[in-house]
Image (cartoon, rainbow, N blue to C red; front, side, top):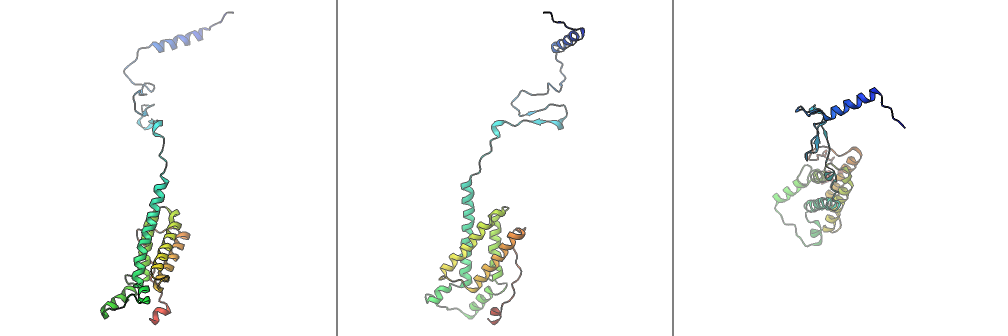
Length: 215
């Protein structure tokens, strides 16, 4: 069986053969710009803005997150908060359990007593507001940019006050109870409204209670 080739087919094939055997010039073309080096960047056009980058498949494997390390870091931050709370509550309570049990005797000058009263009064170093702000600022730093950690940090704070209560004979001083309540209120606000920006937390000055007025 014969196969016919038209003049047009013959012309096209002859032209293609001539193009294939044509000597290479020094001017780069779109096809000759592809590199054969180890580079992962292959330029398919003269324009620099149209560079296509091919990633090395060996580098595409992302390392799996170290969940154990993340958990350990989270637990460490929670323990840090517990360690922060206990001495603060002890300062607020002035080792109340030992005083009640008779292990400690209160012996202080009028100046020292006045300073202690000022420390736990509104705006004082160990007042409800100042103590809550320190704990909340520390908690906020532990949470960072991950709101999912809020529940864990909240539990750590509760645990911190529980351990402080055990140290003080099973009962927190009223001022520490008020501090915990202020912290709980702020945590609830964070959960509903989102964690506030900034490195530190500032609370509104608490209203004076009837008990405080009587004191």
